[in-house]
Image 1 (cartoon, rainbow, N blue to C red):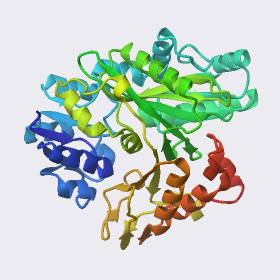
Image 2: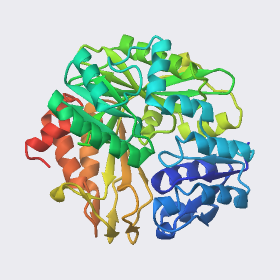
Image 3: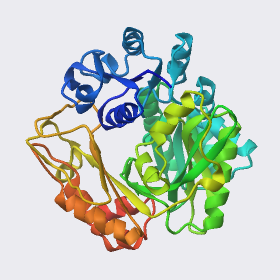
Image 4: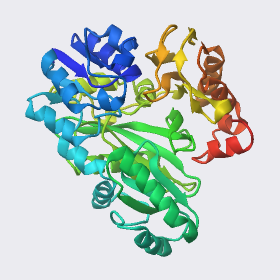
Length: 451
C-alpha cells in the first residue's frame, strides 16, 4: 500500500481524503496558502506545506510550487480532489515524469474526455446517444448561426474545455447569438485558457443525471448507480443533489450505466469518474460530458452503495483490482446533499467573507457533514464560497427530504452570510418535496420571489 499521499487541494475535499488516508494507515500531506493556514485540512494532516500567497494562481494553481511540495514531502502519489489540477492532463503528466502516482485517470484519458468535442466523439463511437449539434468546435459566431439554423432554436453555446457552469449560454434567437457567443467565449478563455465553443440543441426542461463509474488497471469497471443533479443555480452550478433518481425506470438506469461504462472504456479510463447525461420527460437520455475526477456530490453515492469511493480510488491507484463486479452493486435507501456556501441570498448571492463567530452544525442518525470550517475560521475572498456539505440518508426519498429540512433548520452560522435561509425555503417548496422539478426549477423558484 502507498505510504504517503499529498492532497493537491484545500477545504472539505482535502479533509475527506486526509481522513481516508489515516484510516488506511497512509501518511497525508496537505498543501495550503498563506490565507488558508487556519483551514481544517492544514491542521489535521500529518504534514502541511505552504505553497504560496492567498490567490489561487500563487498557491493551489501554482504548478511549480505544488510539484516542489510533492518532491519535498517525498509523497509517492497525489490525490487532486476536484477542481484545481484534477482535470489537467499536464499535471498528471508532470507527476508521471517524476515517477509519482496520480490518483485518478491517465493523462491521456483526461485529455480525451476533458475536451468536450473529443468526448462527444467518444460517446458516438460507443453508440451512446448525444444531443444534436456541431460535430466539433465551431470556429466563429457566423458558423454557429449556420449550425443553429440546422438544429433549430433554442440552442446552447458550450465551452469545449468548460466546467462548473462557466462558458455556457442559452440562445433563443439569431439576434442574440453573436453577443452571447463573444461573452461565453471570453469567459471560457479566461477560465480555461481556451475560447473554443460547441453548439448544441437545448433539451427543454431536462433532468441532469450522472453515472458514477470506477475502473481498475486490469480492465474491470462498474457503475455505482446515478445521481440526480437538476437543482442548479443560474450559472448551472449544482446546489442540491440526490441519489438515486427515484423516478428513473430500472431499464433506463441499466442502459445509462452500461453506456457510461462503454464511453469510459473507449478511452482506456481507470479510477473514478462521472459520465453526465440529460434526460427528457420521456426518459430519453443524451450524453453531456465526462468529469475525469471525483465529484463534489460523491458522498450520496457512497451512502446508497456502501462503497467508500476515496479509499477505492487509493486502492485502484495502487494497482489493486476492484473488489466487486456489477452484479454485486446494490442500491439501498435515498441520499441527498445540500451545498452550504458563503453567499448572501438577499444580495443576489454575492460572496460573503469574514470570521465565522458561531458554527452550530446539525447531527443525528443519517446526517453526515463534510466541512473545513469551525467557529473562529476566517472565510477568505480568494476561493470558492462552498463551506460545507450536508448529506442526509434515509430509507425513502420523502424521509430524506424531511431529514434535510430538519438539518437545515438546525444549522446556524454567524459572522458571515450563507445560503442556508435560501436552502430552507427551496427544499420546503411543494414541487421539490414531490420530486417534480428539472434544471429550470431554481430560476422559476427565484422568479416566484423565493430568493
